[in-house]
View (cartoon, rainbow over the protein chains, first blue to last red):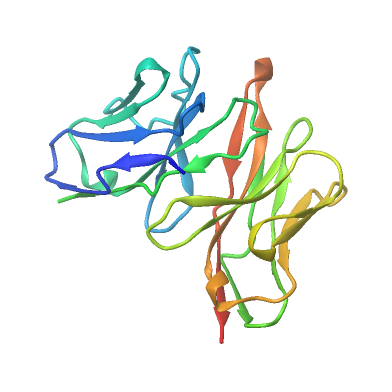
Length: 115
Length: 116
């Protein structure tokens, strides 16, 4: 069955460029999350969308990072003026509902490398 | 502060032996607890969860976990390890914030290495 889909799977770009990362959640999942993972380490929460509610942006590391979710489905994470410390794997997850009773389903991530 | 801890960066075990990956937590409200596994170059995969009910939870691939309220722990276990179990394991717990808002917080991960 269709899981969470992320694109691109790999992205290499030069410092200072903007990048857009895309996430297609599982159909019907109302909650969507973005995380950052550095070098096989733990997950750093970035942002969380739930239905039509205002997103929880508390994890975004700087104002260079932004995300939107259009029509309650696809989400795009944008990083402006990329820096080398932005290099990481960016993971997207979705779940059936807020409340954290349901497990999150993860995509395979986008591996971002900033030269 | 609400948190989840995985005290071991790495666990080494011989194939066929039992394995335990430790997790302790500190949260407000009733804990909802999860284990995820991550294989190289993949996203996290859900293994099992505890919401309520029996303290021993069984999940995918023969894994189980025991909820211990008094010790605030949720250790992951398997009776007989396989080499293919070698991966990165994450414990996660629901944290409750003011206004009833809640979300999952993840531990730092434990790398499990199963040797032939």
